[in-house]
Amino acid sequence: MLALLQLVACERNNVDVATEKDKSLKLSGIEASKETNIKRKEPVNFLLNSELPASSYRWKVLPNEYVFIEKGSENTTIIFDQAGTYTVVAQDSITLDSVFLSVSVGTEIYQDILEPIKGDDIISLTPVTYADSAFHIDFTALSTNDYSCSNNSLTYSLGKTGNTYQINLAGVTIPADCSGENSKAKSKIVFNWLIQENVTYGLEITLNGKTYEGSFERKGEKYQFNWPHTAGVILTAKSL
Image (cartoon, one colour):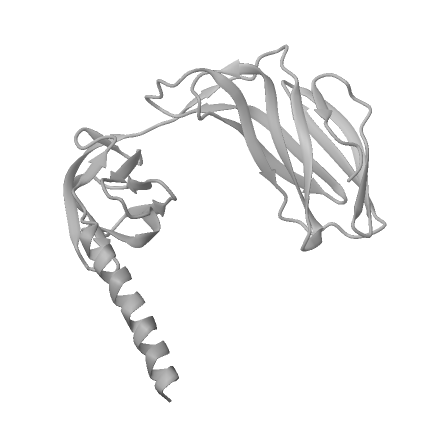
C-alpha cells in the first residue's frame, strides 16, 4: 500500500510539474499574413508567438459565421467568406490563456488565376496505392516546366464512362497575389471509385487538346499499366 501511495504521489507530482511548465509558456500574440484589406475567400495564415506546439491551441473566430478554419502543424489558415470585422482567438487548451487579433475583410472577392499548360510541357503521373486498401488508386501529377508561384496547382477534372476513366488536365491555378518563386505545377489526382480485381480499365488523359490512351488492371494487391506514351503524359511506373 505504501509503495502504491508513493507511485500515485510521484505521478501526481509529474502532472503538476508538467502543468506548471505549460503555464510558464505564455502566449505573447498572434501574427497574421494580413490584417487589413483582406479579400473574401482569401486564405490568411495565422502564427502564434509561443514555445508550445500549435496542437496545444484552440482557434475560434468571432463572429463564427461563414468562416473556415484549417489548423496546421505550424500555422492556422482561416478563410472569411463574408465582409466585416472579425476577432481571431487562440486559446491554450491547458491554462485557458488566450490572445486575440482583429482583422478586417472587404467586399472584393479573392480570385485565383488560371494559366494554360505550356505546349511543350510533359506531365508525369505517378500511381499511388495504399497498404490498407488495394481497391483504391490515386495519381500524383508533376509538370516538367515551371509556372508562376511556389504553391501553384495543376488543375484537372475527372470523368468515367463505363470502365474507362478520363482525366482532363485543364491548366495551372496560381493563387491571387502570389509573389513566390516559380515552380513546377503539381497536384494529387484522387480517384473516388473502387478498382475491381481482374477488370481491364481504360485510362484517357487529355492535355492541350490531345488525348492519350492506355489501360490498367488490378490483380490482388498488384497493378499493371499499359501506357505506351513517352511524351505529353507519361507514367513513372508501369507496375505496382
